[in-house]
Image 1: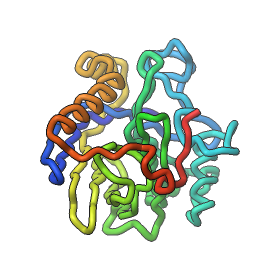
Image 2: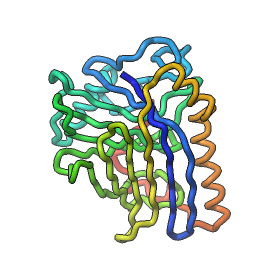
Image 3: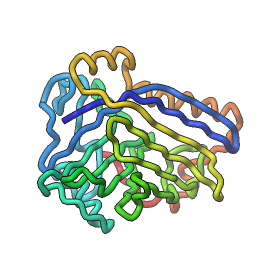
Length: 262
């Protein structure tokens, strides 16, 4: 099963230089099964090369040694290593991946979210998969102990080079309610206990019918290309504002548990 979320994204940086951007995009939400992703090999959305929007397992959870496993199996295996039990083979258990798909063969995902649910629909775990422009990703797992008032909450040092304008010991704070008819995801930055960046994504669910996909394609043409353009455009604006810049090569020891995209 596949659906869409018509979303608004807001980034508001408060320190050391104020900067704000807001834009609209859409994300796909894909249900993962134990053996494979239930998408056709072709069509507007599929797994084949001729699909307009292409889903490719290898774009996600690039964990060494997990090659050849389904995405649900990779997810279960990864969570088990972190002490979180979720069994995708349990009848009725499912996982939902909120992400961007390849458009005309290209994709860039600043962040994707996995939500693991029991057969009764109750949440078990969430994973934030954060990507950077160097072809790297890092995973941030959240289990039952982080589930507070119906949402997953976690504050943890990044230890990942996401932005050249944020040092690697800055903390991510995730607040992720499981998606329903609405999608809400807050990923803020904290430095020395002070919130320095607010990042929010919220939107409403749409069925991924052919008319809806075509409508969103016309509203947001070249969607994944737009995302990478906006990242670099706003980086230029921050440079022009004199925002301090951190080189990736400066602190290699603070880049931990980083995965390389295949």
